Image (tube, rainbow, N blue to C red; front, side, top):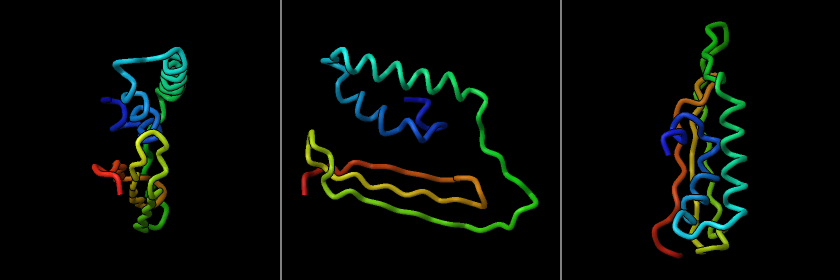
Length: 98
C-alpha cells in the first residue's frame, strides 16, 4: 500500500487485489507478480520538473458510474499537472451503490 503513493499507475491493480486478500486465488498471485515486476522495472523512474518550459496548471477528472462488476460501485478520480509533471491525484470508490 505504501507504493501507491509514489506510483499512481498501480493504484487500481492494488485496490482490486486487496479485495481478495482473505481468499486469494492463483490468478491473484499472478497479477500481484505483474505489479511487482512493474515496480522492479521502474525503480529509477521519477518526476522531473523542467525549468525551460512554460508553467501551465491543468486538471482532469473522470467517473465511471458503476463500472465495477464486482460490487457495482462508482469510481471517480482527478489529477493535476504542473507543466509536464503530475503533482496531485486521487482515485476513490463510492461508499454506497447508486
